[in-house]
Length: 191
Image 1 (tube, rainbow, N blue to C red):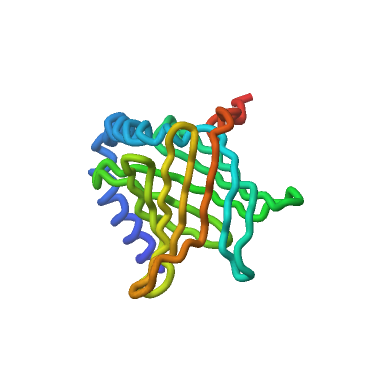
Image 2: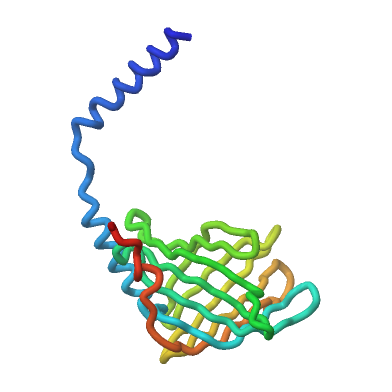
């Protein structure tokens, strides 16, 4: 056992020594590319409110939907929170998403969590907004298509399965209601 421990320690030093001799790459160019990509999403920034219709197990229901979005990590990612309110004011839906950009692949991704599920999904900008998809079973996806312009955010989610017509499962109609410092604003101070 002692020999195995010594061997692993020596092996780790063998690989660590050359790496330690090299200085780490400068993150500035990578972060600049990420900021430039995130700047293209600034149309999402702010607070939004409107109606949402969602198809559920018991049919459709309408919620008052809010979204808030803003830059984070020095503008290298964009964070979005969606919250749907029932008529009595309780939260009926809550989701969190982080949009990021990979300069190596020159592609966006969307890490999202809602209703006990989560994952990392392809995300692409369009001339009028964005599109992203999540798997929805064999041969099926849920495609979210958003049009955002002139203070209006319209988004449709459709289940698209092979050999079937698209099934609308969600629709948002929101208006921009103001600015927000979220998520970067009001950090915990040093002291």
